[in-house]
Image (cartoon, rainbow, N blue to C red; front, side, top):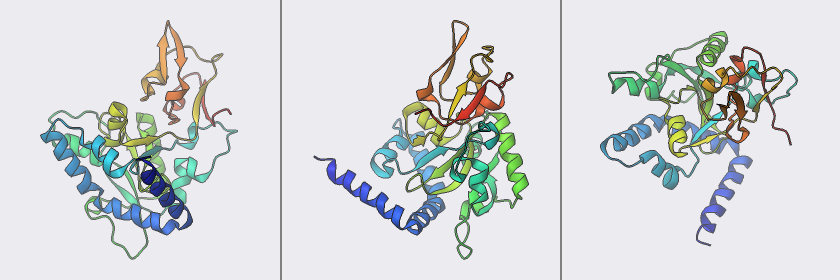
Length: 268
């Protein structure tokens, strides 16, 4: 009974956001404005103490309202799969007001405080979404924000896919409202790294699963290397697929030499 008021409030809050979407858009924009300062504060506490500040903040402050949702690239989807504009990253961005591309906070910060980079992935990989024409762009992010064409965004997404970066929207106050599209690596990304280690902040699967045609699969293991979520393993020289762990990012699809993997909607 102690948790009932909390659940009741959040259920009512989501109903309100569903009925009046501008409220969610405004909250998402405001959170985006202060996100840099919030993650800097959490990073400070993480480095100065042994507590997992991200997990604590997510559990007691954000309560899973801040996180990321995986959205695949259309080239990785099965050609017969019908999808909504919100289910594929290029279609999603075509409906969004993109302000430009800026530096990835996670990779930039990791390299700023370490002599050894975690990876060699590029810094300028974050695609920012604008809100209205009269509001100023996010202060910190606008310092290195670069205006780009739709074709350049497409090239960025394709190159990120080739590199094995997971495309995800960062959302607040619930997964229906997002303010940035990130191309994430597990070694640097705050959302992804913290999720893989402790399940926090919240990270949501895409609406697809990567199915494998075992008659084509040669058990080479390339897809295992591309999977960040432990959904694919080679056991006794044979590929084993654990669908409950699959996030439907599609990274295994694009590099399969036998074209044995396709992203499809989960079978009911």
